[in-house]
Amino acid sequence: MAKKDEKNYLDLIPVHSDKITFETDENGQVTILVENKGIINRIMQKLAKKPKITQIDLQGQGNFVWLCIDGKKTVFDIAAEVKAEFGEEAEPLYDRLVTYMHTLESCGFVVMKKN
Image 1: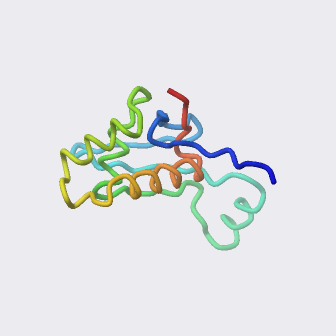
Image 2: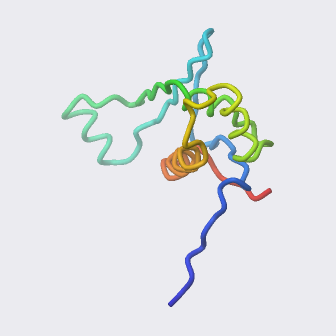
């Protein structure tokens, strides 16, 4: 049986994907802008009035984590910042953060680089 290519997310460095854009308002609230491309999306834009750009507003710890991503810090480094900012509210810290990073990566919002 083949062994899965498992990543230790704590050692990886998240980098914002160049395929998406985001905005930050004066209060530090992040909005990710996703362009809806492709033939199916174009059809849905005409038939169902689907927007050309979907806006995803980040909240709470997710917003904080997004702002920590600078292309230099590892997930472990970011975890320390989350712990300092949110304390016990962040627990279970590593499980939640790794799940969030995996979600960001699978959505194409971040790329995980090796340290």
